[in-house]
Image (cartoon, rainbow, N blue to C red; front, side, top):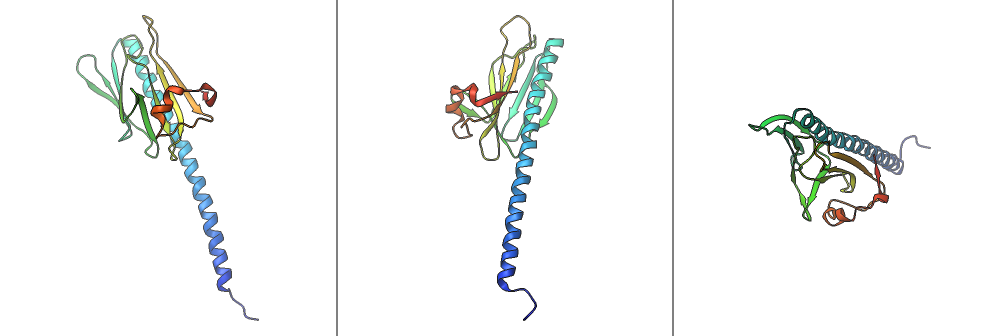
Length: 181
C-alpha cells in the first residue's frame, strides 16, 4: 500500500477549506455591516441633535447637509456668514437617501430654526449592503413657539423597503414592520 495523498483527497480538503473560508468571510461582512449601520445611524442622529440643542441654546441657525454620494455630513452656522463648523464621514459600505416629492435625493439640506426646531420634517433611510432598508430616521419639526424637534429612529423588523422602491414605499410606512428605538 502506498503512502501519500490521492488527487480526490486533495480536492476534498481544498473544497472544504473553500467552504469554511466563504462562511467565515460572510460572517465578517455581516459584522462589518452591523458596525457600519450603528455608526451611520449614530452620526446622523448626533449631528442633528447637537445642532438642534445649539440652536435652542444660542438662537443661531444651522445648516446640516447630507451628501449621500460622498457619504458626508457638513454642518454650517448660517447666522451671518456661512461658516463650516463640522464634517462627519458616514460609513462607505452603506447607502443613504431622503425621499422628497416622490424622488430619492442624493443630497439633503436640513435647517434648524433659532428656537431648536427644524424648518422642515424629513426622513433619512440607511440601507445595508443588500440594499434593504435597515433604519429610518424621522425628523419632525415643532410648530410650537419653542421646543426641540423630534428625532425618531426606527429599525426595520419586517419591511420590504429597499433602495429601489423606497420612494414608493415611503408613504406606506407601517409601524408594525419597524421598531422604534
